[in-house]
Amino acid sequence: MNYADLLREGIKSADLSLAQICRRLKNKGINMDRSILSKMQNGKFPPAKDEVNIALAELLGIDDGELRVAAVKHIISPELVKLIKKVG
Image 1 (tube, helix red, strand yellow):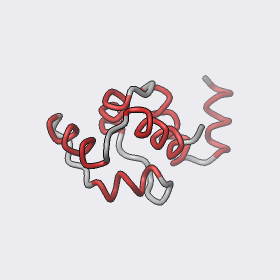
Image 2 (image 1 turned 135 degrees about the vertical axis):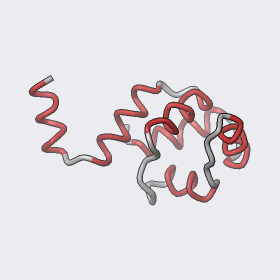
Image 3 (image 1 turned 90 degrees about the horizontal axis):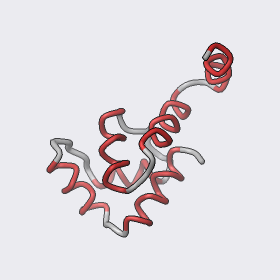
Image 4 (image 1 turned 180 degrees about the vertical axis):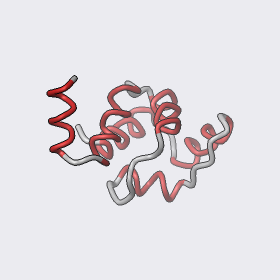
């Protein structure tokens, strides 16, 4: 599953509004605008930074490793993903 799909499914499963998620992130010291969160879940904005993804995963009940890897895969080229798998 790609980053946007994971995020969208996590938001749906958590049954929280985007505003509620942003408030909870703010309580963790992370400022996130709900319009940006909306764009991220719709694939119209690149994935968040790693620290934000860790917090989002915790809030939404998503496996943080899966969300973080999906974020990186979104950013780097498929060729680099293959190389990482080969070397790792």
